[in-house]
Length: 310
Image (cartoon, rainbow, N blue to C red; front, side):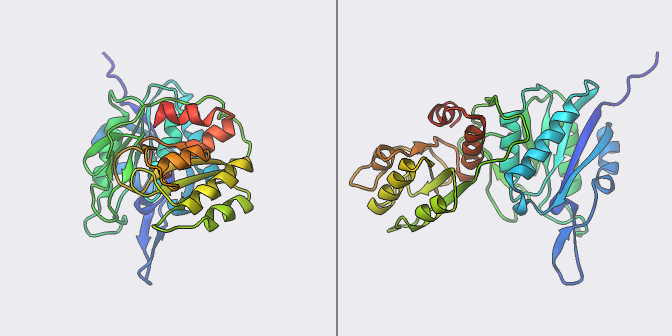
């Protein structure tokens, strides 16, 4: 009897630290293509690999259009029924955003697994080989949906955040996994709307929100204090923004826990909601921005979209 071939996994390379080396000046930058990274891990995982070079960039520079390029590469890979799953090699700075866009776009049950590394590929003790091996095994296994394989753990994409700048176990889901609910209407090559993030501090005024509106933002994610609170000046700016047709979503700078629009006194979450801000639930700023942009692009109702996913 002829043995079954090893599972076929498509690896989508996008750059990031996992593809980086340190130059003579001590600065790291993406220099490797995906082919130089996956060979030994693929052999150890017992999989065949088909490589797609989507990008080679530092993930902090990724625009929503760039993340959409990655999503389209994953979609194209899954069009082949012989593919067991997909691995995306990605920088850690914005991995949570791209993972969530993939979660919103992917309806296929086969696994899509994002991974990367905290250390460059030329480090004396790199973490990339273990992360890549875990990702390949997950993509070839029985997992389903979009996952992040990193630091020995496999976590669902929705609700994930980068929790530490240097620890090898870099990602966490502080509020547990959030609902996987794909969004219709994302397909196409149209422009992505500008969505800005404004982080608040005690005593903040509305200057930054007004600047976002003036710059042409269609959406603003407001990172409030506590359970989603601000000042009377910020509430007034939210009112001006929503009156101008700009959608404002309220999240929190606190690491865990949902937004609760219960405080008043002129600047609390209840006042922000009354001014038109939409609560993000448990989604933190990075993924809230992705969801808001996707909802605006698809024409879906923003309040309903966050209520179903946050």
